[in-house]
Length: 52
Image (tube, rainbow, N blue to C red; front, side, top):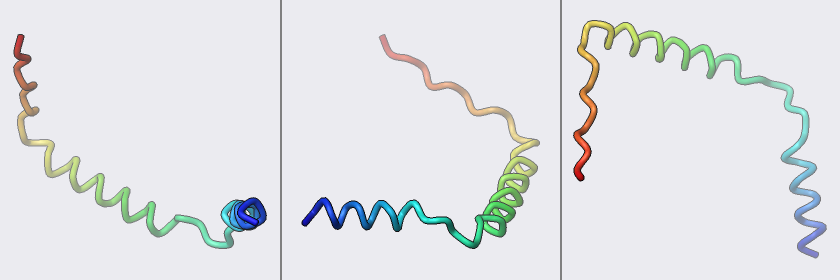
């Protein structure tokens, strides 16, 4: 019985979706661009010293 349920779930999870991730990805790209622009004037963070 579990195998049948797993097969049905796999078919459902692998279905062709009608909508893409366009709006979400566009928003993420805007966010990344803003973060990169905001951090452009800051010095790079220092690497933590390794303890021996």
